[in-house]
Length: 295
Image (cartoon, rainbow, N blue to C red; front, side, top):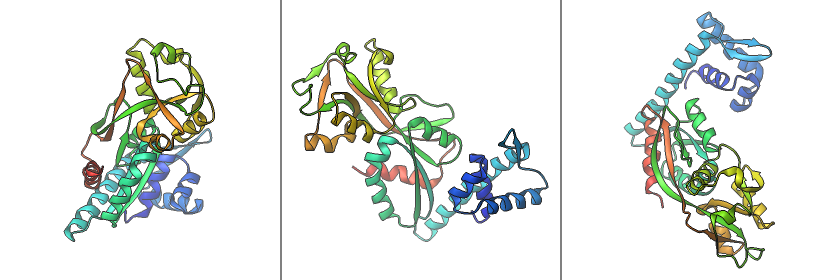
C-alpha cells in the first residue's frame, strides 16, 4: 500500500507486538510506535491498549483493522489490474502451504511462475494445514494449499491434485524382507508420526478409523514436526513412517527407503487450494490456474 502506516498497523494488529512488527517490516521499534501514533493522532482515538502486559486492539483498532485489510486487498487488486493494462502481471501474492506441499511440490511450480511473471512478488508461509487455514482467517495470506481432510467454516476449498500416503521403512533394517503388514500388525510397529494439526496425521487417523483402529492404539516412537526429520529418523532406526509418496521419491530412487503395503488399506487424500469464502484476489486466482497446468 502507498500509506506505509497502514501496513505497519495491520502487521501490529495481527502480531499484537511492536517488536515482531519491527522485525517483519525491517524497521526500528520506535518507527513502529511513531507510525501508530500518527494514525492515532489522525483519527483521534487509541488503537491499542495494554492489559496485564499484553497488547490488545481497542474497539477503534478493530474497526480500523477491518477497513485497512479491505484497503490492502483493494490495493493488491489495483496493482494486478493495472499490470494487465500494460500486458504485464504484477503485484504481491501471499501464499501459505502445508509442509509437504511447501517442501516437495511448490518450489518447482513457484520457479516456473516467477519466471513466467517476473513482476509478481511472491511470499510463502509454511506450516501445518491448521496454521495455513488460520493465516487465511487472519488475512495474513491470499491463498493457501493444504492437505487436511477437515474443512474449516468460512473457507472455500477446491481440488488441486490427489496424493497417496505410503508406509516406509529403511532398506536393510529388520523390515528388509517384509512386503506387507496388516492393520493389526501396524499397531505393534514403532512409528514416527507428525504433530497434532498436521494434515498428514489427520488423513492417517481417518483411514485407520475405517478399519477400527484409533491413533492411541499405535506404538508411537516419536512425533516430529517435519517430513525431513521423520525421514532421517526412519533411515537411522527400525521405526516406520507413513508419508506422502511425493516426499520419498528421492529416497526410493536411491534405495535408502522402501514401501511396505498395508493390507486392505489405501491412504489417499487431496491437496486443495483454500481461500476465504469471498472471491480471492485476481493474482491468487491466476496462480491457482497456472499451478494446475504444471506437472
